[in-house]
Image (cartoon, rainbow, N blue to C red; front, side, top):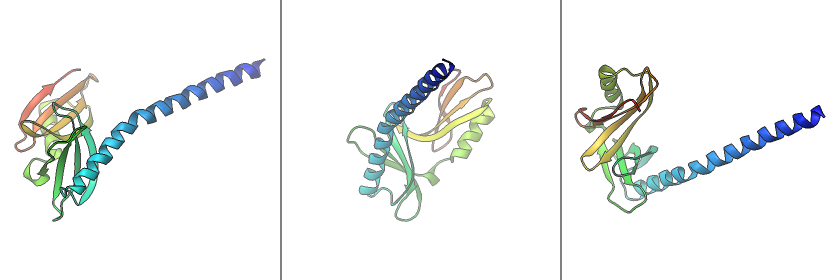
Length: 159
């Protein structure tokens, strides 16, 4: 009898683990496909010759940020509108502050425990650094900084 109980518990746990892995994998598929489409579009339209990374940024205008280098080898970020045909915008990374400078500015002004990400995004008012972090109280904090001069644009604290 103990063997049947043990088998049932192990089988049930294995089944739930397998279902969890499948659900997580399926949930990540659309993001991966959107990133692949954005990378392909950035390369096809000649904005980037070499692609190093892509990630989604969900602001007022959802987009996929694609980082890489242009034909001349200059580091560049390209913002591809997500889910619609729209104009691709881009900036050279040398034209603004670096992600390390953005993070340093946030750390000087706020108490940062753990940095979740520092991403480059864009909206109607131009490119910005999006810094997400937790504070000492483990609450989520979100800051947008102007890409060009590093000024704070938006703060959402203690979520």
